[in-house]
Length: 122
Image (tube, rainbow, N blue to C red; front, top):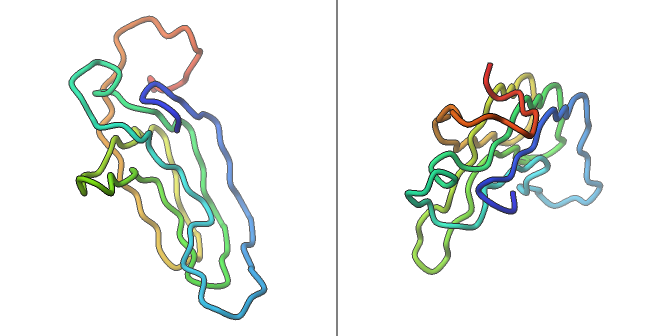
């Protein structure tokens, strides 16, 4: 995500095979959603954060120890985790992979009129 107000919606990652052909162990992410590279703050936008709405990651197969992740970037200087994503109606199920990492923050419902036609208020 490029900013704290970014939004991704209606994403289906279903029935995929990730099979690199090289012999060495693969522990990289094959599906990754990463929060914006900004420190969380007190403003309304940062409190709410970037949003991942209506996302299905289902029935994907990896042939090695690859990763599925929804997470936040790490500030390499301070060692702090930067801003995380708010996940609304996100389903991760029946995947075969090395690891699944989900680091997200609590949803704060928006009280302002939504002009982007987001369906995050279910």
